[in-house]
Image 1 (tube, rainbow, N blue to C red):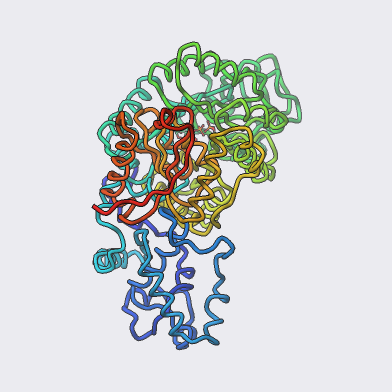
Image 2 (image 1 turned 180 degrees about the vertical axis):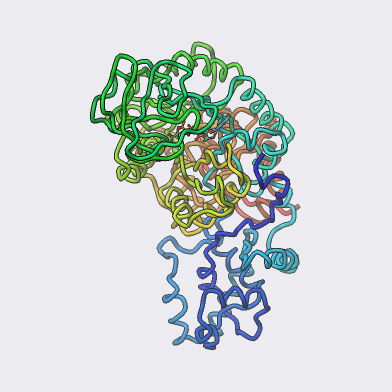
Length: 636
Ligand SMILES: Nc1ncnc2c1ncn2[C@@H]1O[C@H](COP(=O)(O)OP(=O)(O)O)[C@@H](O)[C@H]1O
Ligand SMILES: C=C(OP(=O)(O)O)C(=O)O
């Protein structure tokens, strides 16, 4: 169990990573008004002479810190009524602050007030130092009440899922495979629970699946998707009773005989290992944490010299730089695990080491033959997959940038470039895309991330990924809940700076021949122009996925009468999936949906929403084929 289990509180240090100086861009008050906590906060970042300059004297009370930050957040999340025009870029400190010297500060104050009055998203917390956290939280709770920042009803809804667009995948392992931790992860913002079939057995994975299903069954407004990640043809070292220390220059042997684990020899789980490697090859352990140069081979062993040493633990990844193993992508064990997934009705397979589209077709045909509605995410991690990226992704429902193995099979400097390319390909094809591995690696042992890790999350969000993934951080880390909260906060903050109305590159090409795509596109344009959320009713999830593809600035509220669809939609960017029984009367279904949103504080009376009546099985089919409307939420 992780160290932060039990201490969890959704309000606790949720926004510990929000870059503080940015908030100042929107805050305008005089220094003497400043209460002690924000005063200390400002002092931390700005020299006293700057803070005491009247014209620069920015905000002051924590209420303004909170309100202005929230405004910034609301620019792109939730209902989009109050967004700045698309052309406005996030202001620099200089451009926001120094022009004030020429302007009348009262004007600025007026603008700030107007923004405050129109704010819609709940506040973020700006911790100053650990001992200030509780004071700030107390102050914020009070201020939330005064300013009516967040409808208290919103508290009832699982806030992380509603407000953040980029979804979070958590790998479940020894730190998180209990009922308590699954619940806490879900409430902290997990959208997809991933089980890595390289570890554990069916009994342990069964327990996790049952727990997630139990959570989903009792949760009124939240659904967690289940992803089964195949082991694939990966090559791993064997189990060890205790880690082996490898020192540079030392001779070390890999043998295909099972069960060996001495100070200078360990088993590999793949008989053809000896045939696949050549003298001079570089073998990477755990994606390059250690490396060994092949010096000679025999029929059953590979003798190496340690180049970069370290601690070799049980079942570590072995890659040969620049080479993929000659194993099939789906091994016998994988087929066994896939069947286990069919029996348990998981939502997604993440298929390891896909090298061509053929294997995806094979899997899809198998799933069709057993009438299993499970989507296939291909893991791009093999050197051999790169020339076939387009055909592989075309055949699949989405892709995962599996940076661990990718960066071992290919030079690491290729990883960020491939990440961007894979995201772009997926975005242009309307497929889901997940960025994975090492995102908060240091949080496996530390309670806070490195700044580089924070930037990595921000980049993945900006590049347009549907989801970002945690691996060891949640599987066996000490701080699984904190890791999810950091991801949540960084994603939310980054999303608030993404300009509204960015469209995928295939715009105008695909939708011409496809009615639903055309309607998704135009509904997005309409909701972006009017600053509304989008409401869609979907049985298969198809229309909600299409809408997500166009990335409308407002939330996509996707109502479905299928629990499986609700779960699956949890992966898609910007989609808030909601389960609701549909009535025979579409108008009644729509009214019921809006009532539910209003009750939860997701939309307010008088607010407009874009209503999409389209898709493969639209609830309005008997009335009309396709249709987009703007409806005003009625006042009860
Ligand atoms: N079901 C599990 N049982 C035990 N340990 C697990 C499990 N899932 C993940 N882990 C641990 O978490 C680590 C990180 O998870 P992940 O990145 O999915 O695995 P890997 O990098 O080994 O493919 C694994 O190396 C393993 O030590
Ligand atoms: C996600 C990855 O796969 P796995 O965790 O199965 O090694 C990876 O290699 O980055």
